[in-house]
Length: 453
Image (tube, rainbow, N blue to C red; front, side, top):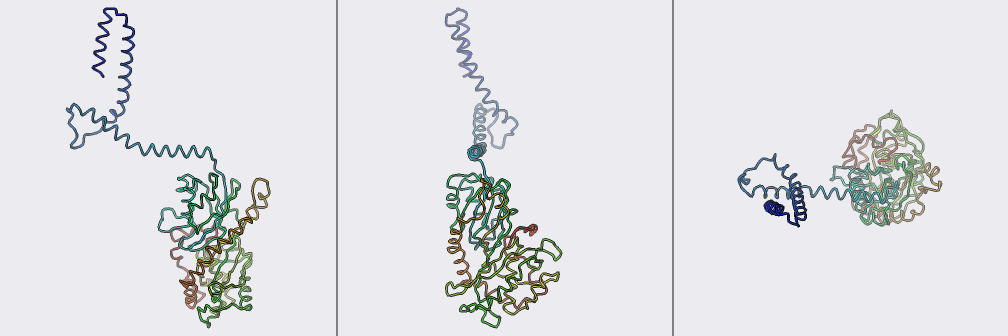
């Protein structure tokens, strides 16, 4: 290109001496060639400038190689393009997400969830600990894949203001868990989320809520149920695993009398490993607790205990039930219940986690203030009631029954009751093996209002 320009300039000078009539045209063409050469030079400057400080590596082309400059510039340019290609893709994806967010602004919603907890280490996600799979791992993955949230929100859940209502423990199921978060309200959102979830985890409903809504802090109460074989209430002199056992009306009445003793406000420090007797947050308010009529499944009789309270500490419900069973079987007198609310340490057995299910959560105060304001719906889930019942019948009840019949978790636990002296707390001092909280600190696990049983 340079040689051609020199020849062109020489011709132009010769023509100028003869005052040729095409001189203006030649001068115009000369300016064009100069501009083109200058542009090519400027494009080559950045790559050449970056190459100057670089030291030649062993085996590099010698400096006096006439083709070294050209080949080096070409190679460095190619390498630079290859290095910046992933960055360009990331920038493009970021721009696409930004454009998407402009079209679909995020809105604060709540999701009504149902899941079978078997095989999971609780509800709460444990970032950086992939060996403990949780319900939230599958949920967040489905939210990203369905296009409800950007990928970076899945890595940092605070960006979508995510909050669960109750942190269920290892193996615990739910028929009415509530989570609040900000999402893009895409079309057919529930269907798309469920398409990326396993069948034993379902999103049953969605409702818009106020921008400051927090499912944990707004929750007034939580209702759990505990499903167990009725032979657990048989006296210790009876066969420990008599699948033909049937609960008599008199025995059921005594069970309900003991359960009703929990109602009201008591100091439940002996029903968790997290609280001392003088901690104010150990005092919890129980609104209702009773055992429903028994029923037979797979030739075995089962019963369901329901408990409603403002909040629960870790393992509190399972220990409440464990103590009643110990009394019914004759291992300890009824008076131990009153003693357990005092400052004295009482060794209380913890019933298996298999039968525990979060049935529903309550938002009475929120519903009174915002449920009929014309902008928001009450969080009562009346229309989803049938879906919740169907899910329990299809996934939760069968899982509990099948697991109990195969693994005999209740029978195994009942055989440990003679080991408790109901005084020293040494047996309950150990943390839950493999539980969701095993991967992190217990600090703040309830915060006075978070259910973690």
